[in-house]
Image (tube, rainbow, N blue to C red; front, side):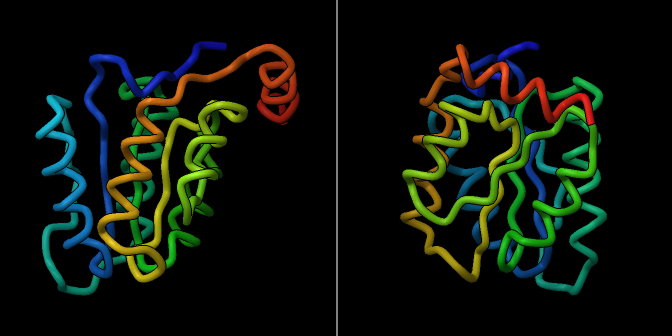
Length: 152
């Protein structure tokens, strides 16, 4: 299994619903400020949309191998994590604090970071993105565990 290390040159694909477009724009701005290439699949405004449409765009790109890592944001993060984890090869981790963001990479090799815009603030979100991007997958015994659920 490949380490979908978010520190690669592959563009980070990002999507959100109407509840999270403002935070998504801040995350995109941050990613670009640190020199990361971003593929923003929307949404781009406050008009009500179905989170599933954007979750499926990001998860599909990760599942197919088109992109190595992604970020999804909705109001709580719950819906996005549920839709994303239905796709093969996707390990979407819903995180609400920095420790979980770090561990999702270190032990679970998460390839999608999911956040809730109505749950966390901008400062915490940007810190979680930074930590998630900087944390490598530890491998070892954790790889064996991941391989167990990827065969389901």
